[in-house]
Image 1 (tube, rainbow, N blue to C red):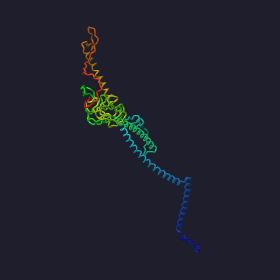
Image 2 (cartoon, one colour):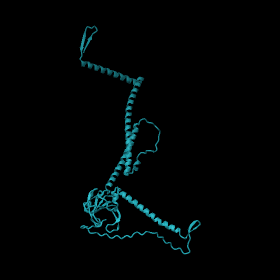
Image 3 (tube, rainbow, N blue to C red):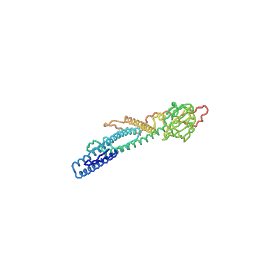
Length: 401
């Protein structure tokens, strides 16, 4: 690039040779200088106008501030709307979880009255105050909503903790309830009254008999600890397993004992083999379930109707109450009959509209109690003392329980 410089008389002329980079640097320096001068001038004039309160400058400043604030508010509103949307979704999920928690706690048998007292009042609870319409939630409202959700989440966590503990307890009790059949096959003799197969007399059968071949595996009906593994005079080779909660299962007339006292067994574990030892007429398993030392009907346990020992206790108490009420009603019937017979006696007469007893000429004798007819029970034979029978030797059969 060439630049020619001449004087006024055009006599002398000078030529400057500039390269491209020199021209670019010069242009940049010139532009920077102009921008700096313009900025200083604008800043000086703007500050001066603002200080002196020039109308044009004041309006310009207000417009700039309004635009900046409007942009910031728009960004904040967008963020608040997004947060409010997320809070609404979380509230909907929390409501679903609360409904699920109430159903689960009801199924688990957990009482939530104490925890419900901590929850905020809902539904038709008393509320009020002036109506202040809002187009969008404020930050304070969102913070309050989040605090309430956090409180409800804590209560829900406590509920599910209770449910977990109750379900664990239920599963543990169910694992210790003898609900598995100890021997495969049908029941030969059920629980209750029957004719004794040895002496032919009426007797109470305190368990279930499972006829099977000698050597058939006998399995534990539930997990527990072996407390008895010995030979008994009547039960023969016998095993007792303690399942906790005063619940014990008894396995009698076995041919071989495979567990020892103090040993822990699992549900379905082989503990013995079917035999015909003790008071037995043939190879079978005599299975009993005892609760607090009292024989229960094993069918209720094996059929799954009993899932915990407390159910047996509740059922026993209800049956005892029913028997007591029946006895009371039966005791009231003879007294009613005696009252009716006394009113129909010849000494009773109607005087003055009321029934009065007229004394006889003979001195009144002491009233004799009227004996109500009582049905005589069938004669029962006195039970013979149990003697320890000789062990089963050879092919001789011994009586069964």
